[in-house]
Length: 345
Image (tube, rainbow, N blue to C red; front, side, top):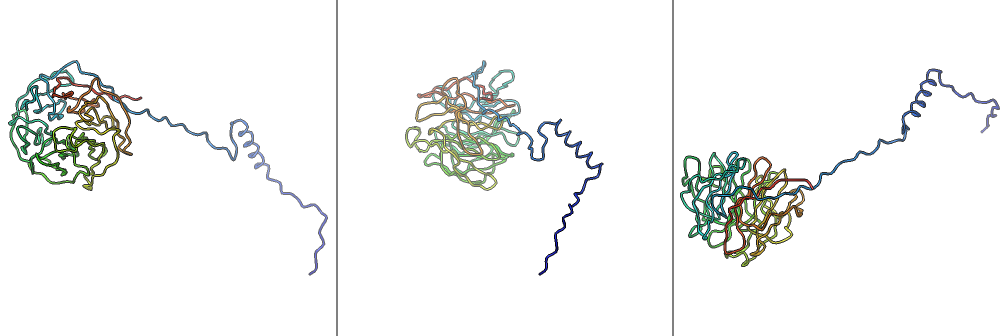
């Protein structure tokens, strides 16, 4: 194949039009003025402030209950707290109903239940305050309702049940845990009126005296007593944190408390789930634990002014209230209320 001779003439280099050269020059000047302007430069990283963990500040209220009480059904009725029944001084069940206005600090008798019970569960549903089961001389299945007009029996549970808890989610009350007088009860009952019940699911770990609250669309059951004997030192306690999903009816163990714990209280403040007080064995605790509902992780989040178990826990307007309760046996009910305030760090 023949080759062509290579020309010795220089190859002309294209020159950009004058207007384009002016634009490029202007860009170079602009880059010189604006620091960091270059084809390969990246914007400075943004900083995100991570909020400090949410803890609880606990202080004893300046006002008191009309009489000491523990193991009562405690519910929120509008802006008031209603205490229904419970265990009074002398280790006897009471039928007393007490209405508390936390804004003014007034706590006054408001009537009586039809039947004196303790270790019952309570929920505000259908415009009235409902008390599920409880113990008297024996474990009972009675469902009572109280309103300003008085108290009445409105139904019965499928079987007797005491040492139970209840919480309301989307207008439905869920009755959780407990003891029928002979054996542990795993059924989770659902009701919207306190009269008719359906089995919505079952606990993965049947317990009595659990700490129960609603958070992130689920029911959380923390700790509890495992034995059928009254003493929490017989049969043991659990550190399990159980999550019940009403949408699926499934209950799973999603975490563990640092210690086995029963007779504790639970509530949600500012989106954070807290487990408060309770007993480790027969020793009452002042510890407050925070539970991460996304991971099941648990951390210390404060302490109560003193050890306390079997108290009613409610929240109103972003503030929590721990009502009554007791200290180490023999049973010594308390007439004090602890105010729980969320704080960062």
